[in-house]
Length: 563
Image (tube, rainbow, N blue to C red; front, side, top):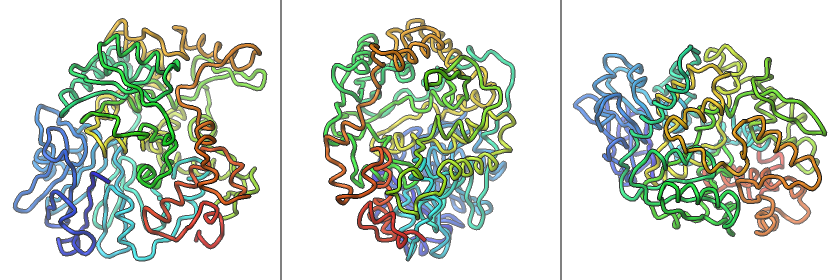
């Protein structure tokens, strides 16, 4: 990893038993912990900062903004922490991990959305923690694979909750904290709906959130799709030098994105998928952090072609602001479900996430998959796993619609997208702004929808919705869904082009079956996405974390490799 935070709840000698000081730009020691930081953004305004005092130290790692003007979040947090403790974190905004040691309450704290994962282990002396799971599990002498986590990973594409693929390695909880001998959760992410002007408030909060992220270091650009999220950044930010769209030249996605870039006078470039689009190398797989499939690192096909220092993106805009995890009503016809406007009155939380949001695959229907990663009943296993997470988060919501969103956000499958960007660029995460998270929590689910979101966008720029995304030709949500439905079901009509390159075609073209599986493997019958998950798991267990030895994807399904 290019950027890393690693620490121990102990003195410098405890730290040096695991890592060399030379691996980091700064190593600081407090009364109760020692932490090393490697980051080319160290000291850059609103980026990673370190504060050291006579009997205290603090590191804020990532992207963080203060409630008032100021550029040193670590120094500010160290001033606040002795008086109010973790409540000081309520005022810090962004995508960050905070490590603070005032001599009384040493802790590691995530941002409210846990957009920066922190991993820890107690298997090697004083508790060790860090942002790179491979580096943390490396301090364990003989790590063992976690069967339940492995089952979740191959069935869903994510490891739920706080587990990892290793028994000895855990994650700091969602909206949570880590102490020398304890781990717990905070209450920054709790649904509390109110009645207010949702549209006006969202428009104002979006403008402030984007303005906070203006003036990034060096040459700055945007990852641009044909949708609404990233084009808002073009409309609101000045000084952008380029926009990049992943897609095939001449596709609807690329053509609309180019038209949007021309509209705002920003240079447009295409990241054409080639041989490396489905990258199975450890250098890409590492960004899934062993808890999510690396499929979402789709912009890493040729990182050298993104000639920028700083990058903006619209990740999680649809999740937090437009109701991506919102259970919708639907009517079944011709073997398909036609979504209708409005909320499902009594949604099944597990079923909604299982069949509409996570990357579920019913592996129990495939006899080629070994018993040690196979749940006897894939649906029942995954339902139980999701319901366990719902129960764990129960204090954060009252309505089942908010339960769907809470579990979905806690286990957001797309986070490797940001993990890669943040490790290679000065990447902003606008959706993680505290004001936008607060809007999400205070807005009832019936108003967290695309209609409210689009009205807010029009308040910012009346022409923002033009040209329309290729799969949303109409102004009304219901009309768009009806046209999609008709295109899928009626002969003679073409479906809308996918916004993403054809995964199956790229998998076949690059002959990945021959590279990943022995001849005659039963795993070859699985869809490409699921087969890539198996490769991710092997990569973590064998290469990245030097854990239980696994020599091939097929070996992963034998009983000897899973305890």
